[in-house]
Image 1: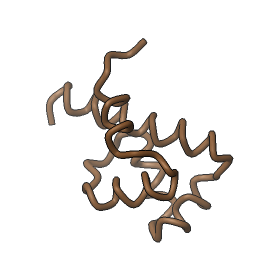
Image 2: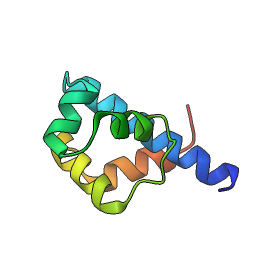
Image 3: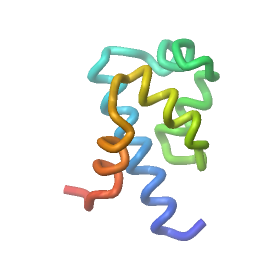
Image 4: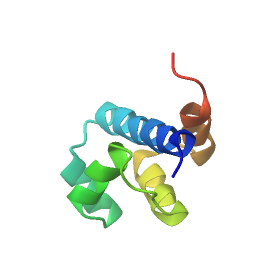
Length: 79
């Protein structure tokens, strides 16, 4: 992976974390609701995984965040 791809994954993970915290969910609670493992959620939030679109869709659904919003926020330059 190149630096741009790594930066995007980290930004996407930060968006997941921001929305999870706003919903007052722990990583374990989010993982349980998504049918995923808690360590997987942690690695996604840290940008360590090139997560599949289906898992992204599932996490976004549980967090009640449109995919377009997640991607737009992750793709925009850091403030």
